[in-house]
Image (cartoon, rainbow, N blue to C red):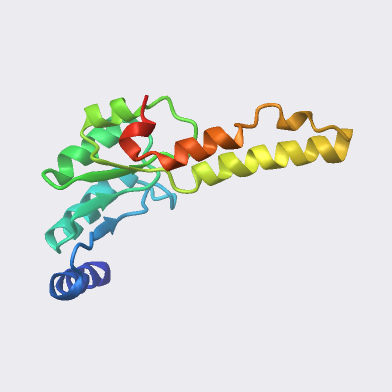
Length: 154
C-alpha cells in the first residue's frame, strides 16, 4: 500500500516536472528470499503499473519461465531484467522472451576490478608483470570509447 502511494506520488511529480524521466516500479522479491517470488513480483509489478510506472523491474529473476511469466503479466508495459552474473541467457534470448530493457548492475565494474586484482596479485605474489599480457592496448580502448554505440557493435 505505501509503495503504491509513493508510486502514484512519483507519477504525479514526473508528469508535473520530470520532462523525459522514466518511472520504474521495482519488486525485489527474487532477492529477498520471498517464499513465492514470482507471484509476489507479479502482484507488485501489476500494482506499480496501475499506479503509473513506465517500466517494471524484478531484479534477480533468472529462469526463462519466470521471465516469460513476468513479461506476460506486465504487458504492454516493458520489463527490465538484471543480468549481473554468468548466465546462459543472451541478449537475443531475452529479447525473444519479450524483455525490453536489460540492466547489468555493477557487473562490468566487477569484471574490470577482477582483472585489476588478478594483475596486482601476480605482481605481489610472483613479482611478475605477466598479468598485463591480456590488457587491451590503450589505442584500442581510446578507439572503442570514441565510437558511438552503433559503431561499437561488430
